[in-house]
Length: 150
Image 1: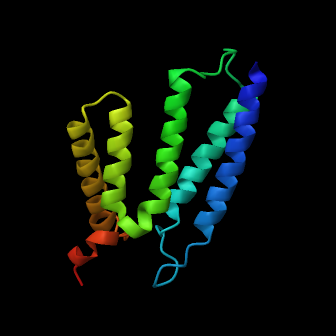
Image 2: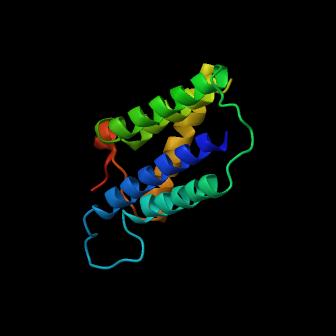
Image 3: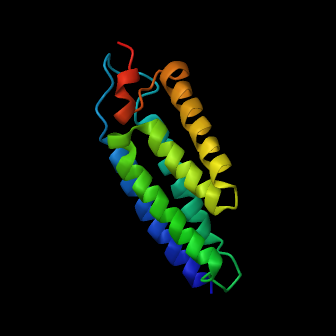
């Protein structure tokens, strides 16, 4: 049933549009029109999601089965983890939320819990440092705001 992929593609396009609109609502960075601002990365993600969604609509997978077995349950868990990640990003901060989200997803994919959350912590710190210092884009520190250098 290629119909399922097309419905999913339409839903993902709606998500891409909403995500792109949300990214456009970020305030302008101080100093005017910089090439890279806080909306750059989310806008890029919205465009990629929109293009992938169009591909799903135009060229759906000929496989008829949706994975409503263990794989389907894991997909639902991944979506729930990502929703909670988005909700906890501001209050907990980027590093802690990323540690929890990446660690949980790695654990669900079969990694040992200690290693999974260690990978999540390293990913959170590395991406935070990359965004803060290499790209000069501030990410929320949340509970770790005492580390903020003024």
